[in-house]
Structures are given as structure tokens and as C-alpha cells.
Image (tube, rainbow, N blue to C red; front, side):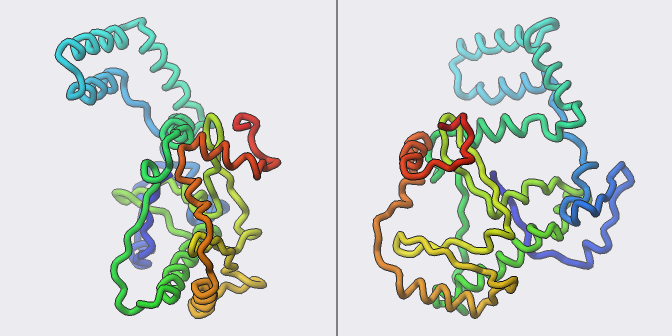
Amino acid sequence: MHFTISISRNPRIIADRKLPDIGYKEDMAKGKMLRYEDSLPHLPVPGLEETAKRYLKSVHPLLTPDEFSNTSKAVEDFVKPGSIGQKLQARLVKKQQDPEVRNWIYEWWNDAAYLGYRDPVIPYVSYFYAHRDDRKRRDPSKRAAAMTTAVLDFKKQVDEKTLEPEYMKKLPMAMSSYEYMFNCCRIPGKPVDYSAKYKYQEHPYIVVIRKNQFFKVYHEVKGKTLNTTELEQQFKRIYEMAEKSSPIGILTSQNRDAWAEVRRVPIIPKDMPTNVL
């Protein structure tokens, strides 16, 4: 999944925010971050005619005149009354109207666009950040500690669900995907990958990679979060002690089926779903 994060927030604007009276209800038992989730509108299903027009518009530049003519005829047959297209559309609408289904496309999209996609995650799926030059922190350990402190502060708000929801046009947006931002990973499998979510209380550490070596760094010790100076000391130690090692991490950049085969040799988790064995 991809996320857009806005860490800097104006408390005054948030405090003064008033939602239009269109059915949004707060459930503080779910925490500040998820308090609107149950009253958010469900994702609508586009009309069949609209979907057909958008499809033809998208394929037009890719087809020859004859190919486009044949495709247009197939689409016309697909949307006419009594067609299979009408039956499938009715099934979609029925699923969308199911009160237990918040997003009718969620599972299909996750599998088709992400978990089932077999090309390497890097560079075809993953996102990355480029940081501006920080003239105040030239030392790598100092800079890493500063960024880690900021991220941990944000992570704490997500874990404890105290983060204020994102808004668009003064209306709250779904925030449930934020729960998978931390302590969650994508594990290679066949025919599809699967995700694993871990309890943040039981995993208070981060992974640091230096010279192809992986280090577990606890950011919380006996209930106390390490401050920036303490994190910097940990990073400096890693920076100094790391030795060049075999680049085993490159295995994660392979085709997902190939990575799944390699990974299952030394590691077969007890909780691995049967569909990936």
C-alpha cells in the first residue's frame, strides 16, 4: 500500500474544525484516529456506461482503427440490457450495499495491484523518499537519530490511535490503512504474497542496515523511549562496528515467486497461510 503522511498539523485548525451535519458520528472508543470510520460513506460503484466509456478512452491510443472498432463492438454488447455486463454490475452493486463491506474493491485491488503482482517490488511497486541536504547534521548518526525521533513520535500517535484524521474538503477520510504503516510487512508467497501485522507492544525496535548487516535497535527500554541522543549513540556504534557482509538483502529485489522460493528454504513460519506453500 501507498501512504501520504502529513506530520505537521495546526492544533488550532483541528480544534476549530466543524463537520457538516451529514451523518458523521464519533466513536471515541475506537480512538481519535478511527472515531469516524463506522460512519464514513462506502465506496460507490461507477455506472456501467461510465465504466465502458472510460475503458474505451483508455485503450484508444493503444489500438489500430480496426482493433478499436472491434473493441467498441465488444463493449457495446457487454453493456446492452440482459448482457453479462449488466449481471456483473448488479453483483457489484449488491456487494457494495452489503453493510459488512466497507470497500467493495479493497481485496481485489490489494491482490491484483500489489500482493499478486509478481514483478520485483523494487522499483515497480515501492516508494521512496529523498531528503533535503541537512547542513546542521552532517554526521550520519546524528541525522538518522533526528529522523528516527520524528518518525517514532508519529508512530506513537498511530499505535495509540491518537492521531487526528486526515480531512478533504472539511470531511474526514478513512484512516484504517494507517494501522498497517508500522510493525507490518509483506511476505513473499505463491501465488500471492501476504501481509503480517505484529503487536507494537511486543516489538519495540527498529531494524538498521549497515554494510549489508542487519541490526535490531530497541527504541524503547523498560517502557521508556530512547531520546535523540541515545539513538544517536546506538547508530554511531553500528556505524563503527559494521563489517562488509554478503548482500543477502538483494534477494528481496527478485521476482516475487523467486524470492518466495528462496525464503521458504530456511524459513517456514508456523502461521504461513496454506495457499502460499
